[in-house]
Image (cartoon, rainbow, N blue to C red; front, side):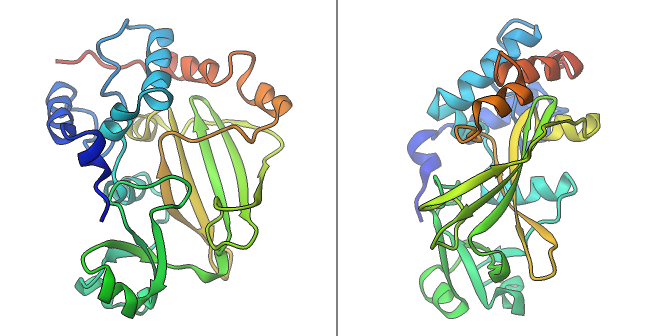
Length: 254
């Protein structure tokens, strides 16, 4: 197993516990505002600080982002239908749905599918005992659907890969929904998930979608300029993030 948290953020547990005591109303699965309470108390300052720690500073990203197991629990709490998952060799792993699995070779998560190993149950038990895995949904191989939430705006993306079971590996394409939507998931869910995230889904044989990944630093490079302007305005991601913070100001920390 690759321990990226130990490499990039060895103080992760200590910082998250300190934040839990400082902001007790924040769910410990997702302390998305951990670096926002020491900046000016304005939507502009919060949006600027959030973008900095998500896209320009690597260690903070490892501190605040949920690991794989936390992400599954977080998506379930938010009401998303989460793909069946278990630790290899556990009692839950004996279910037939785990005859073919995706093993996560890092508890934290890797870039563009690099920490995922598709294999049969027997191989997982031989080589990856104790690792977290999810059921492999064969009908959805190579295609995924992303719900991208940036502040007050949601965009839907279909991602497809040519020649790989992972939708974001190798040659492929992204199809963005033609019109971004203004979305409010309700105060509790908005504060649970925060202002910037993406959930990736895979479709099974009957078309039902299963949440397989939670991403707190989603990329938007494949969005064309016209759609980007319609979605976010002339300020890019900062605009809808500032509007979100105006609607959901951070509480005073202790």
